[in-house]
Image (tube, rainbow, N blue to C red):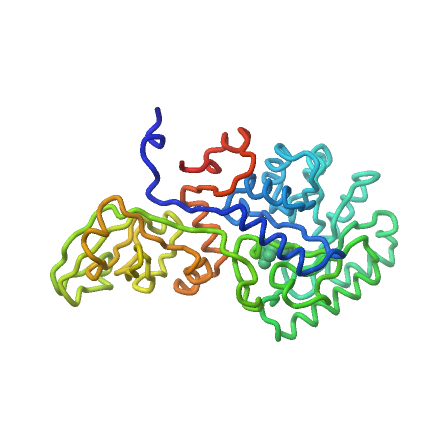
Length: 381
Ligand SMILES: *Cc1c(COP(=O)(O)O)cnc(C)c1O
């Protein structure tokens, strides 16, 4: 018997797979039947668990998944035979044989990779990434024009041409129009089977940004972008952490590292078993409220590695004993709210919490041995 079987985890990130399914359907409805919805499951599905999330999305009707690198692609392929898997960036020149033997689609990000695709032989499917104003990966518009004149794309045609928006979450930003116009020009020149410009935020920029396919990550996982209407997507995660101890502290005492908080009254303080190791941002210090039953309780002082301290002076004693859990994420206080309080991005909060907490899945249809065999993907109870 292992210890984890006889006691529950102190920190549980609850992941509602039905909510991910609903968010996928929501995006599909928004873009309409002509536009495909590809799912981005990079970074272990933003921390929520690559395999369980991928399975949920495939069941919801998703045909194409994007991952960050070959490792993620191979793990995905080992569980899912029939689905298309594309790799955003990972050494196609060096590992081309791995792509071919596992039926993985490279995203081509520069001319060297483009020519490696050419020498890979007949029928190597690839997606072409074009740089339109983000300055990360992708062929420049000049590269594309040159290769076009050299007739490279006649010899090996990209099945999807994609680009990535810098300011998709800001509806009024002129960068969107600039990028869209540049992308449109490349799209008209190459006439690929599909074009894809929008990620989650781009979905809410309107039809002219959708082209033939959108690539969504954040929206599926319940993260709202600035440009979305309220209630556009539903929350996916809840976060609970256990109260480990309660103590009485006299007035004027320091709480936590750096003594950034001092009690202004005789206080009752609870020590809760979540810290920055679990992904709670250090920048939450003195800024966050956690919920305990119907009560709201402020975080006092800094976030430490394994713990936080909260003020429970105003909460009736019977409500807090050593087995009570506090809520850090709920339907009323989402990843977005936590990120705002901490002054960081919601994607960063989610990927870190997912990596640091015990994950528990709700609405897992047909759980299979393949998934529960992977410790980091296994639920707590
Ligand atoms: C991460 C990523 C996406 C998904 O972005 P979201 O805003 O999370 O939907 C799409 N395309 C590319 C190239 C990405 O790197």
